[in-house]
Length: 231
Image 1: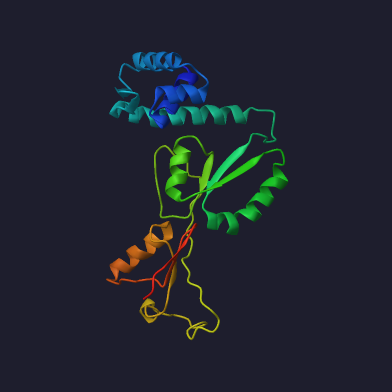
Image 2: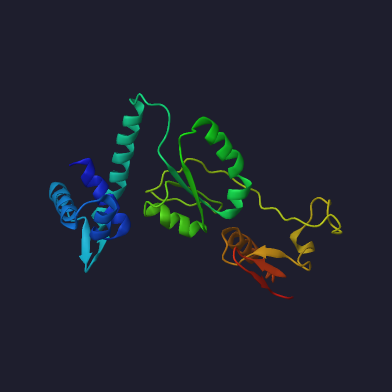
């Protein structure tokens, strides 16, 4: 079993295509087919089901994918542990959502730039679902999102922490500055909320559903447009 076979297997599983995996790795499609066949022969099991041009993992392939990620992770960690070069210089492509990009990233990037000046950083903003898909297709090195806890055996989660959900109001709002306000006291007020399918909006709507509350916002704000809904 060779490391390149594992890398090829992972890329084919991510892209669900031998031809796309070959293109991304700089191989011919026949080379990818041979590598997968040799890996299947060594393991004594079929890793992919072929349906036309698309390939999907078999149950055994899905189980082996986790092991392949673990093997490559440990190999890379071992290489870094004995490397004489301590300064990072490889480019880094980060995915995040717009709100975090503007609120969290300036200080993070400033710190990172001071300690790793040779690393070229690229940032892509998109909704969490798109970022996760891009990461799983190896289009992003890491993602930093604001969402409910998510777990997957193929990911390595470096950090997870809770963030408070807060509501802002004008200083002239009658209840501004009051502590211990109940949600029911605010339901008759005009709410400005993110669009309905936004991650933290979904969490808020689910919370309201547990209280049997239906809230119709005065204004829904998306990244690209304003959708006005009058009460």
